[in-house]
Image 1 (cartoon, each protein chain N blue to C red):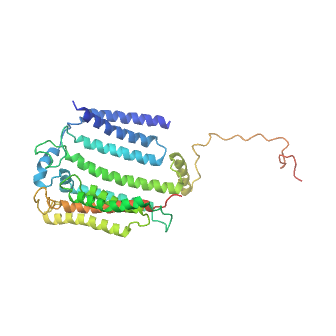
Image 2: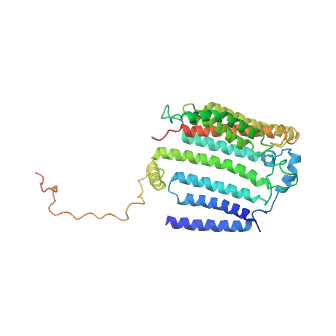
Image 3: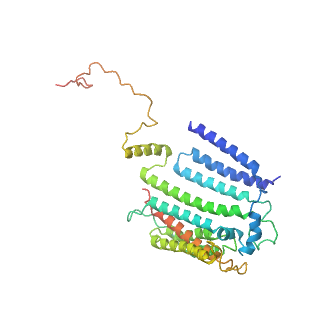
Length: 161
Length: 228
């Protein structure tokens, strides 16, 4: 069977991806979503490198160990180099978007932003604003007319004229 | 309702991970082409670092795609952030310790970054790793003295020239041998700095391009107006 070290590595990689995905789905702050994305990408890269792992093998650098020692697979490491750089690009763009959203709306709460995005989009399209999801359902009943308050008389009982 | 959907999604992902973990066999996975590359790379490429040999020797065009993606992301982030609106509010300058530390760190970081770039085919490292260290080397003094920002024109010129150098080496290989980005200039003695043909040149081009790009990106983020 595999040694406990390999099992710990696999659990660590899957755990990072799970924590990142959970954070993306649950969090209500945009910046926490970016951090969860960073963790998920780190876990995915670790998982890719683990595919090429061989127990008790060394890094694929010649001249360090004696010739003939088994080496790990270099191909997943090359793919992960590319993946890390692409992840850095995606995270940079995400951080830039978060900065601009904060400058434009003043908040990073996803629920508030969802409402205001919807309002901005419908207003830019020229449509009437849709009902907010937080508004109470059904029409509000009008209060019954107060007897004695007709023809413009106000509450203090002094009528017009 | 949203939390229930999140829990169902998480349960599905957990089931997927369990299936993958059961079939993966960490520590003894099946090796498709890695073994052949480990056996053939020292004689064909002549680099001690087999990962760099694959990255720049066997699969150089993937590295070119990676450079394009990084360029697109940095340009898009610069467009999203916009230009600094005049002498807006700057961050306050750092104290004595920060300024002195930045002045001492700058030459050390430049030396370490250039070392990792140039020795990419001998020891773990390469263009991307050293490029990130070079970007940090040029951005730390900006953190200590925010008024002395980096020059965007110089950064764009360095980035463009380095990218053009990478592509022109590939076109030279195309003209010479008929394969784009094939390794030229002979293999040399394994273990020397000037070995493995054009691999050190490609590493230097990649390192300068990535360093300039990331320094410009961090400068753009620092330039965007600070919140009140």
